[in-house]
Length: 452
Image (tube, rainbow, N blue to C red; front, side, top):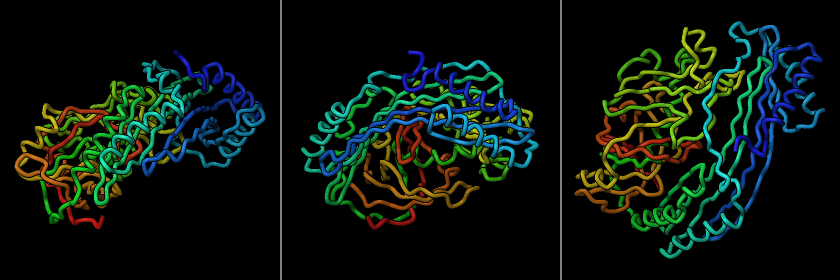
């Protein structure tokens, strides 16, 4: 397939033609339009029963005008000719009210973009019955362990395009499947989650078994004292915590002084075993190969053997720095600038079982939540463990333990990584996914035991 039935290339061109007509009638030659369409379906379950099945289908149009160094944007979810004309007129009226921006760049022109194919017909064709069948089998596994299951099974397809009067036309469409399950006992819980563009790659029964096993193994949790521990973070926990720092790999954030990389964007901050790239073309990644400005995404070597190597540049940030844009900008106008979007953390040759076996005493953490920033410069984060926290003794998982609150610097954490597993596509508390390994980390700082 080379286009989506939700929003075809021909439809994009036709709609943009109407936008241009409306803009030209107002005497405005420079205009940009973004179009999006999506179809999502969700099956939700709790107490070992499906209790909700919903579906949603929608479209949006976002028009931006440029007039004498001014720009503004207006949005609508209506695509009839009158509505397209009105949203274009609204964008123009808002633009004329703005103060001139001396940093505003002209519309970008078309540049080559390497396309990626992330549309799977089987995901798009998933039905309420097929999702219910997957949920039913997962519930049976959890129920057979005398536990209670809750979670979601979701499928989505979407299309997105950006066009402008300078001749740019970028187009992308994909699918995504998601399955998340929590198994709950009277004093314990376990969790597992996976996403993929291809629904057949999501093994719901394996996820249910993993969640049930964690819940069963963490019953009657012991209470350990707070302090510094050797910790094995499963990939979801790595995503939840380490994923908090990548908005700082932004030229605009550094220039504004709101990034922990300000003043040290070329320093060696992490351990030798830490290398991180941003790569939209990685086979386990997802998302469009262009950014909100229509610029092709370039792979970035963010961290190489512990040293900061590259950061993301929008068009404006690149112009100020005398650099090339990297294709990580957000739609204009915005105050954020840019950020990496397709994080891949290099792994090692250890397995999770080997990490556990090599640990005399430590903790195994399934995932984290309620994560907040405490110190932006040292990137100290606080949050809590949940849904499967275990004591490791003598190289074996000994028992479940009460959850902890932590206060942990990400800079310190990435200096204290002892071993890494192979990287996998991970899903966690955050809305985004990353490709990352499990990490065995020394001196992880837990500050108190939680009350639940």
